[in-house]
Image (cartoon, rainbow, N blue to C red; front, top):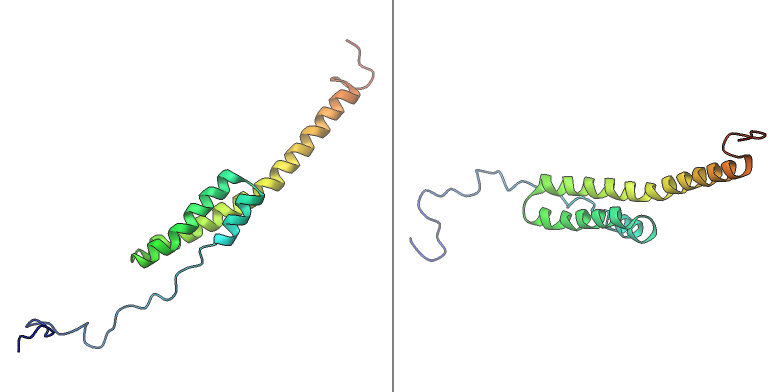
Length: 115
């Protein structure tokens, strides 16, 4: 029995009742958050989140499951940092404007100080 569809001698199948491992669906790639943070918040951090989120499905379907989960987590973290960058920069800008306004209004050394 050596036809074109026969198994070679000594081949016993996929492991006596054990099928291939089931890894489930691919992890969430957070692509929507990456796109939104790129458009609305911080472009450099958002681009990194976009790249990481695009790597998730590529890595998953090439069999690199741990790398796909790491890319998904990295995409999430970069999107969070991109989203937080806008409020952080806004607060720093307000502090800077208040400081400059205070220096301009009260003088460098306080009210009533003369040079």
